Amino acid sequence: MTVRDLSRRDPGPKVAAHQREGDGVVRVPYPIGVRHLTVAARRVLTPRIVRITVAGPELAGFHSYQADDHVKLVFPDPDGTRRVPTPRPDADLLDWPSPFPCTRTYTVRRLDTRAGELDLDVVLHGEGPGSAWGRDAAVGDPVCVAGPPGCRVFPHHRSHHVFAVDETALPVVGRWMEEAPGHVTADVVIETGEASDHDYPLVPGPGVAVHRLVRAGTGSRLGEAVRDLARPDAFLVAAGEADALRPLRRAVRDGLAAGALVTGYWKRGVVDLDED
Image (cartoon, rainbow, N blue to C red):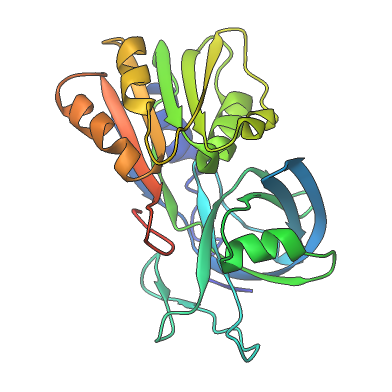
């Protein structure tokens, strides 16, 4: 493992304090590492979504405190060489090789540091390296994980949340449902490319209502669905295809919600979009 001074500090208390009583969105860096792990399990969640569990002793000291924390997987070059980044000694950043290696970004769905396990959910779409890995990953395969770099913390104490996501952000919603305070209420709008994506396992609390949509072609109804659910006291969390989120960004500026975290996870025609 290559990591920048994991013992230097623990960002967990700062994240928890903002979740508990903060306002708006705050960026909190993590001590960032590059870890060499192996595939421990592969589980099919839906016809298009698989869960890959990666494991290894290098997960010791891994930091993740927010539902949308993410890592990059570093894939080998065509000749099999895996060119990995190096943490900077003076900042919570990585120095990446040039040209930039092949990577894909995934949400930290579950972290169990005691067992040394990390779950990553992979949407199988297209023929890119991420989808190929999700389809072909076998127990014992090596995996290089870079990150997480940190998080953008949003408050968990608001009386109401509205989530607007597509299939790529289902892990965020799933983890948030498990970690949010029991008294919090939410409307969760999920728009997916296939009806079968709605089989993704979620455990909503008693105050969480889930609204399911199936995308028609490249059109999106997320914006209008969220407008119908808008509340002036709500905090909005939106993640998915970048163009589909544009109406929500405009609506936030117009006062749709009391606060918002809107992140494009992917964009049609763009490889490995990174809005972090």
